Amino acid sequence: MAGLFDDDDANGRQPADVPPPSGPSLFNDELPMPEPEPVHAQAYRVLARKYRPTNFDDLIGQDGLVRTLRNAFAMGRIAHAFMLTGVRGVGKTTTARILARALNCTGPDGQGGPTPDPCGVCDNCVAILADRHPDVIEMDAASNTGVDDVREIIEATRFRPMIARTKVFIIDEVHMLSRNAFNALLKTLEEPPPHVKFVFATTEIRKVPVTVLSRCQRFDLKRVPVDVLTAHFGRVAARESIAIEPEALDAIARAADGSVRDGLSLLDQAIARGADDGAVITGALVAEMLGLADRGFVFDLIEAVAGGLVAEALGVMDRAHQRGADPVMLMQDLLGLAHTLSRLKSIPSLAHGGSLPELERTRGAALAEQLSIPWLGRLWQMLLKGIGEVEQATDRRAAAEMILVRLCFVADLPPPGELVRRLSGETAATKTPPSISRSNPGPGARAVVNGPPIADAAPGASPSLARFEDVVALAGAKRDAWLSAHLRHDARLVRFAPPVIELNLSPAAPRDLASRLAALLEAETGRRWTIALSREAGAPSLAEAEASALDAARADALAHPLVQAIFAAFPGAKVESVHREKPEAEPDSASVPLAEPPPISDEDFDSDYPADMEIDR
Image (cartoon, rainbow, N blue to C red):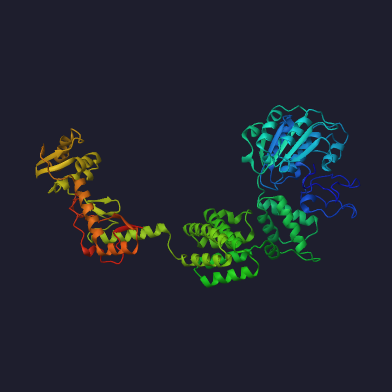
């Protein structure tokens, strides 16, 4: 079957008077121009077909694949099945045809064997290049998906090659085969005859069954880098005697997205668009052809956004629109520039390398020094969301302008981390007594997370234990979480008369709770304490008291007129939780007293929006 990019004439075959390709690779800088062809021989061939690689040296951007295959030929370890995968236009089918020629090349003298450098002049090479070799069968699985098509291949494997050394089956877009077709191929693919090779090509490797992949030697063809594509397109333009600016070549290479074929098609289109004799294909012409914003517009736009200049940002948008730029492409260019600036900010050495275009290395490096990583990260997140909004909007230009307005108005906002630090600093400054400095708390102070330093008691001084809550707080301050938790939940106070504490412990309380509490108090106060156990009911535990107080506060909040008005205005709303401020600890005390929370009064709801209450609709 005819390949997609073979050098065919209008009738589908290459004329006999066209000389076969010969000589060195077409893509080396020192190569001469291709030999001129007779005008009457065939119609115009697009660049993607005219400069299609004919040997492994012509493949660009696939060094790993070429090295592996060359070593395989040199060692005589050639697999019986190959699976070539990658995006469109990176050379999958081309590699398959080069493999077919390499397996069947006999050399100029007709005595050669398999070689990674096919001669291009022997009968097999000429026939395979012309797509008329009877032993190299190409099948498009997109249009031949059934079991019957695979059965024809299986039947053909039973016969030896007619004129070639190896019979090669090239199946393009193999993932389009049906499940039954794959199953029919499995046995033959696992143990093919020695004279048969399979070469599969696909862009959807995940749709190929694992049972097929396990029987093939897999090669992942990479996207060709932008700089490699730019250099390649420059060499092609030079051979076509086309004058083109480097900015235009770079724009075409970026638009190709790693595909050589797509890039050559775009180059063909650019040549046709600037067809005036002697005219130079400029970057502006290519940008207009692709519907892209001029790269300078994108830099102007990000500078206006960074400065919060709404009028200038909308002015840049208007000029880009007049040049034919698509709003979605403009937002995507802005997103790509944000990524480039983030890389320049993180790796300044990129500005001195050759991987970035000149504009990014100069103007981009200067801009990256002025912007911060948090700001660029916020720009990236907002643009990601904004591009989706623009794509779904009925008026894309209006949606893009609203994204720019939004970006300009948040340009001068500090990042979230800075906001948290500022709020934390203001809160700490408000709570810190004047006599205590956070930066220099003094020799008798200890640091408290999210709070002011608390002065430790002087050596030998006893902590103030005026209430049972002080005892529980002391256990927490000594980092005895086990003792503090059981005292809060399992101990009900019957009598508190230091140095005697009478408690009613719940059945869940551990047996050594009293002894551990007595030891702690004796160590801290320097005198013996008696912890007596009683069967009297006693007061509720601290945890029960806090729960009761919270329930009472919630009931008071629900009964407040302001909350009732909110419920009337928003049917279905509910009070999710009620938060109350804890009493602040005295800075010169070693204990943290847990005072009984005061009841909620009407003054707690004087503000228009109560900050101590969360209401969920």
